[in-house]
Length: 156
Ligand SMILES: [Cu+2]
Image 1 (cartoon, rainbow, N blue to C red):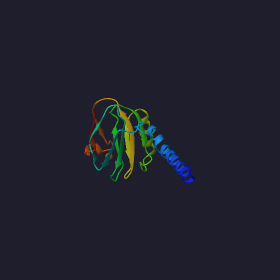
Image 2 (image 1 turned 180 degrees about the horizontal axis):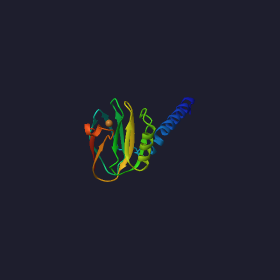
Image 3 (image 1 turned 45 degrees about the vertical axis):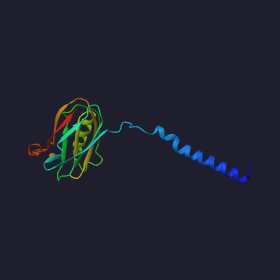
Image 4 (image 1 turned 90 degrees about the vertical axis):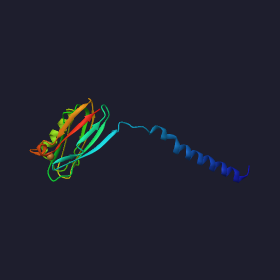
């Protein structure tokens, strides 16, 4: 065997090893590992929700981001809807009152979907609706619901 043939064999083996290494492990990293299958952003401002009609699938995880595009605090109270695995991310909620922070977090722990954000802020709630039905949501800050901050979530 000539020196050149040995070298090309070595090169072929090294290339083969690289290809195997690159292709080998990918089979294990696919599939949705609990990431929300339903993601939606709801904007809230004076005085409406956009959109104000939401549709979810029962038993499927949801990531709902409530974005306050208005000029005062707003909330999205969907506590009427039965849910499980509720978590809330207040890191971008803005400068919200401490007692409201506690309310949002204890509601999440109790399986209730409740978001609150200061003007320009946003709060993400993840949850899994457990029961089909039609549930209304609203902003309960004084006068806001009456002015139009209401909506409906349908769980199918
Ligand atoms: Cu409001």
